[in-house]
Image (cartoon, rainbow, N blue to C red; front, top):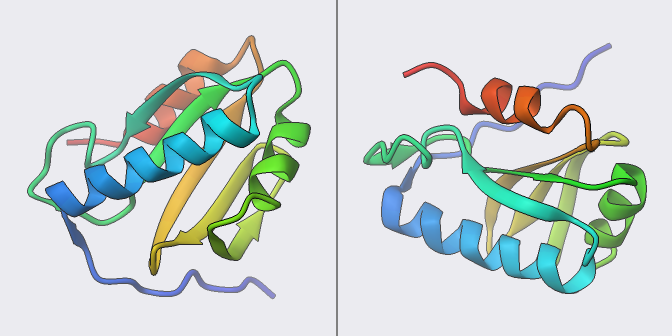
Length: 116
């Protein structure tokens, strides 16, 4: 049985960028080995409404980075989690964080960017 992701209302671009900046600060503070953090999806394309705020970073050890991020203060909930991906609730909104291995960063950024 697959659990459906909860439907959340879209965020304005400004709110999404603030949320992503706060999430990036958590990543850089609690996951210092994660680098090249970039915005993906709707916010990367500067869409006026952002449906899936997403950040992508790279690490030599994605699983450890995801574990550290999930244990960081300020995380209100974990909706979905794998070794390289986590769907978090932060500031009452959902953020998709993907941590790629060193050799797959480019492909993950392109995949997370979505279509226009």
